[in-house]
Length: 616
Image (tube, rainbow, N blue to C red):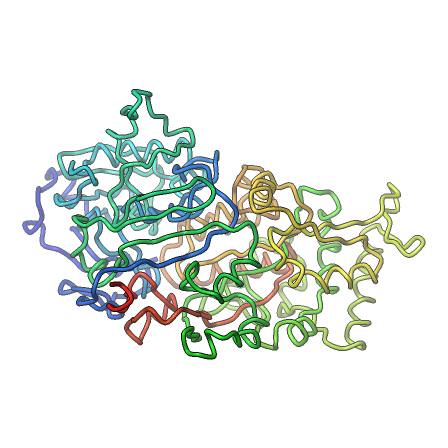
């Protein structure tokens, strides 16, 4: 993947690196894109959708689902509180990352803790240069030693970062501003850039003692509010019930281009709920949820009729987005023997009647997902041709012949005739896979075991998503059921892969790379807390993922991603559900914002501000 960068003159920065490194590297860069030239250049002052004169003040009230017992999101143990990095990836409200991923452009990063970085032509290392103004909330500077220490901690305790930075073998401080990251393989075009996604943690705080003189331990959960560097810090909390974050008045990065006109709320206040139903009721009444990202088609189409909405106190709007649509689908857990045969997985896909569900339950507002890279140039279509075909030919003996001769298409239902045809196809596939109907129940010919499926869910929404599918499977002769558990148990069971089938939502970028290992590789299949929810162990997938990571240019990356997408689809690891190319947002009329929100992400609530009379 060829980068497009905005160069910075070496003498304009704080300290030169040694001449040997300077000769090897390509020159310092600030804004960096893996796809195309960024619309923001050296005179970048603020995002287009941010108002640099936006007033500060007020509280945004938000809900959180489940509970929490930790302020340490970078380990497996514990449930991190709202406001911390989701899934332990990124900095959340508390920590700044080395660089800031653009909110309105794909695969583009801007300076944050690191003001610039450099790398050689062969991408064998990267050197990051820290902004001398970057500091912790206690006033101490963020140092290269903090970065080196953080890198070691994340590689040791955070499985996602361990996979993400698998090819980064060392980090070393070169001087008072520069850190060199060395890679064990060359030509991973994405790696120098995505090092910027790493949060920086305060070594001196974590290696110190608490108010009682006890040694802190970053390998364990904690409810002691940690020292941070970001725009917010913890103001108060009630474990498992609520948490309030307050804006840091002397935040060091407030005037950086990525922050100018953003982080406008004085406080984020999160209230915890055990399930999603009372959250909706609380939103209608006001005071607990001010901003809502709506995911229910039925609710969006017909339930915004409550008094506050009718009176104009609550607004709603669909914001279009150009970002790739996530793969939302039923993941079948191939760690269970019954899902090992692709014919069984394919048969189940023929029992999913999206068209009827969309008409009857989703108000016709959803579009069927038919790619793991839905939307844009990375999505496969038709039959493989040109470079993609050349790539797949290498693996022809290990792939279904139909992959080369037929476009992948989801089964189409929607009426009795089509559904009967789909059931006949499903029955044929089940018989070929070694199952037969006995007393109306599909039974394994060899073991005599009846075929059963439990669909795991973490909220009543699962009944909407999977209710008709479950009924259709029962009519077909499969003992299908839905199991709803509380959010903590749901997360625990997913981490342990303790499920038959569950809905998974996987978001992709327009520049796929190292994260694909965590999604699909054999190495991640049995690793707790990985995102390889189906337990895929496929040598062809492993090879394609590796080729994607080391793609030499954008054209090759696109062809390889098409090939991977096609292989994943024809193996029926997921039963794709649906998506919408819009963000459905509702809010209490206490906010103002720049009308043209970022088209890539849809909405940037951090750029909104509270009306002055409301804030006061």
